[in-house]
Length: 154
Image 1: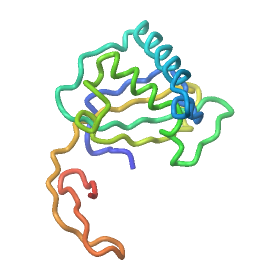
Image 2: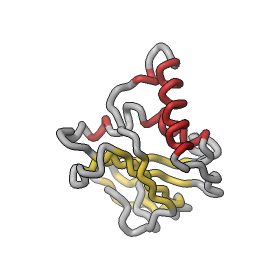
Image 3: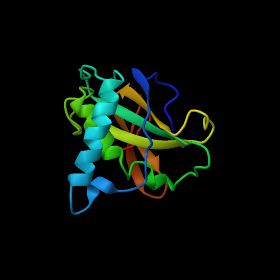
């Protein structure tokens, strides 16, 4: 579920299509590296350089569909070329690194209500919660930990 209670610290629309191809994850990294460099050049030319966030962040990535595009299975949203796009954002200074030391987690969504704007990617960056865990009952699994601030489960 998208975070509505917390305001993002940054929202940007990237003029790039999020694809379901898995170009950078196969036996050869060359195609993925080439795509990452193309994305980096395109975003740099359009002014998407910035200083890294000074705290841990979490990301909401929304695939904005264009005309005649269909939604994918939910598990496919971040499967394709997002890794190379995220790597380009690291090079452009958005994050020190794409490890969990700097990006706590990423969630992928799809939006078919803004087709006139798509295809593109909306990236929303949030300051990650300094979780305050407490135990709660989970469906058939006994107890779980839930953050009192943001509602995340662990």
